[in-house]
Image (cartoon, rainbow, N blue to C red; front, side, top):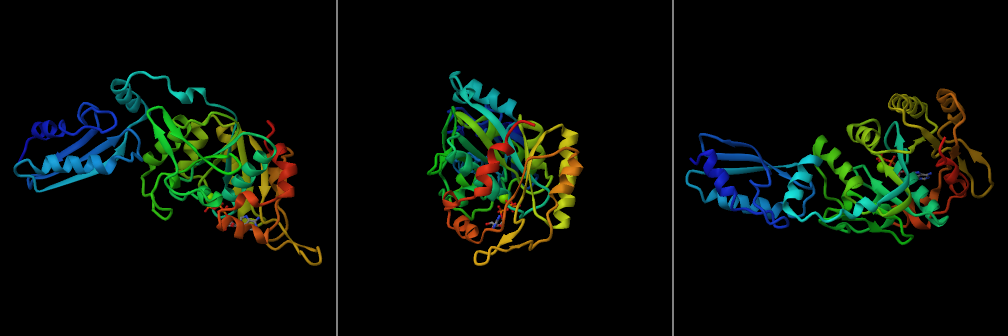
Length: 349
Ligand SMILES: Nc1ncnc2c1ncn2[C@@H]1O[C@H](COP(=O)(O)OP(=O)(O)OP(=O)(O)O)[C@@H](O)[C@H]1O
Ligand SMILES: [Mg+2]
């Protein structure tokens, strides 16, 4: 069975293909354990959790370790460096080129949030982006739903569409010029499950903010995962948000959970920019009569809870909308309601 020192020496033979330095000097090897049965396990802290070279690095580590006498098994767990560690590792590895993303200028950073899932956050985020882009604004979408990303599919953006180098990640671009970053653009196939633990998810969200070349944007919209999960908290606490747009539906429960979300925003001192009541009613295309399918609107109640008038919009059930969304053609969707309200929703309160 090899000693810890022998294992580390062997790992010095493996270089990060991009940084051209060995894993030990880059401080990537963590929690090394060698069992009496000869099983070696360790965590490999990658500079970027989604590092496209991870399989290559892992295969190479297995090769060198399995060549050591007495090694029965090698287990590599992937982890991620903290931003500080990453800076230290990259700083010592590459010449100090100016990070292009220091030129990022985002005028309004707005998160789209809901108390519960499935109320239409991703649809609203995309519709808002499309409406603002049509009105001539420069818009980006940061898909912070790391494990359930749906933005690329709505825009018909293929998996694997992100490119990047030492200086940052380049967003994918929709037909209308909306810049999009999402984990679904990192994976090879759309239905690949992203199984990451909390800290890695938070790290990825932060990276989507700090390491992406967003350039100059009027609006960067952040599509949050449902509810008040860790990932949502990461966004609320660590990104310099202008404010939040709340999405709800007319069901009683949705109004209740939206009040909970509001209480959280008040605690965190984050302004509510507006409320979208989605699937608020259905207007019959034949006779024009309006049906409140999920019940009466709760907007008045929500405003009362906020203690002040909020810009708000009632978005109807749009039968054609789901078909456009499903076929990646959300940019063809029209919403008169949003054309009027999108700019108002995004005014500073
Ligand atoms: N106004 C609307 N009219 C018709 N269909 C809608 C409307 N809003 C959303 N949908 C449909 O409802 C479904 C859920 O919407 P969406 O994925 O945007 O919700 P979400 O809140 O982002 O969900 P999750 O919490 O899972 O992230 C989708 O199939 C979408 O096409
Ligand atoms: Mg969603």
